[in-house]
Image (cartoon, rainbow, N blue to C red; front, side):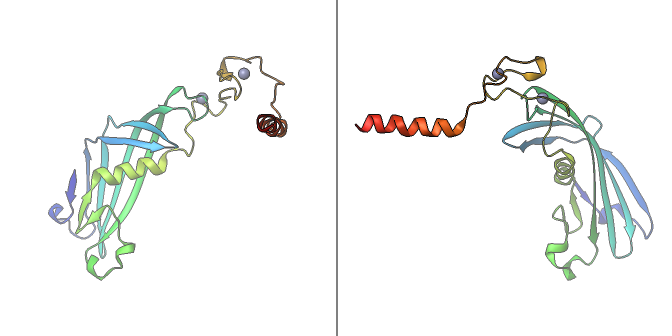
Length: 172
Ligand SMILES: [Zn+2]
Ligand SMILES: [Zn+2]
């Protein structure tokens, strides 16, 4: 979806607002793929201000993917919002200061909305803040109870020494 700001024919101080249906490509995070669903679409608001346009997107996305600790399928509600400024005289601006989602006063609504979701996602999506994760020894889901490995911490220093000894035996 592309929205041409000029075609909105807004005069100074005027406001435009509309909801658009939206499909968001899966987002990769920590090596895992997260499906994004936006059933209510994205709300785009535009304000004609001095020197340009203020463009704001707001959406509520449902994000599906693995919990980063226990890998269980997890569903997150993400409320995302992002605002960009598009100057009418964009040619006089340093390109680095211009929104990468607005080219010649045309807004790439899908990419802007996707970016808003990416920024609103937690760094580490979890099924719950209290998730205990998987046992590093046997892989059991510790949310279901203790696995019986407790106290069997392998001592990595001895692992290294054992490796050395084995190699020496092979050499002899
Ligand atoms: Zn979890
Ligand atoms: Zn275990």
